[in-house]
Amino acid sequence: MADSQMPIADRLAADVFRQSYRGYHSLKPTHYKWSHLAPQSIVHLGQAVERHWSDEMLGDYLHCDSQEAAECRKRYLMSKRINAPEDSAGRLRQAVFEWIGGLAGIAEMDEATRKSLAKELARMVGNQLYLAAQAREDLMELSQKLTDEEEPPADTPKRGNAPDAQGPWGPQWKD
Image (tube, rainbow, N blue to C red):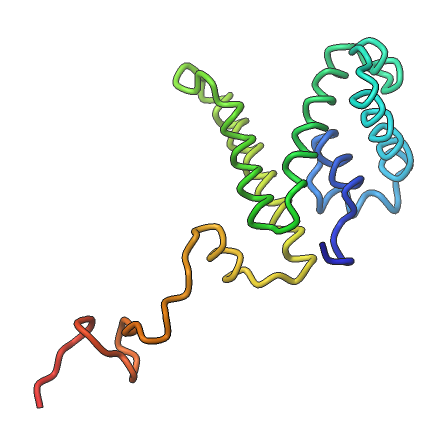
């Protein structure tokens, strides 16, 4: 992980409290809620997971009801799984995997729910692209990793109308 990337604790806080990474990054230096309270809540969530706290106990620490505490715990655990891979392609794959995991019964979902899920996926992907941009990763290389495409061997004919194009592709000229 590159030094310029957003720290994992900040990513967890943004995900738990449904904030984009870009939004969290811009709010943290100027807002007490994001610079002190959110990171403190992430510590409490980590302890809750480690020590198997009840939702009620976690809710006391987070100053919310037990249902919201349970939802925060779920988002915390999902964010930990999404941010576990070291590379952007791995994190993007994990984000899609986690998102798909929440799609049981998608055929029965109403349009508003589907739009909400699409917005959530877009935020997850956007967050990982933000991290890739912070690390100055090459997006073409990232795209290649995500599509599992490999560079063709050096002796493979090239496609298209390039000056060095060979083989059956493109216009064929007779001499």
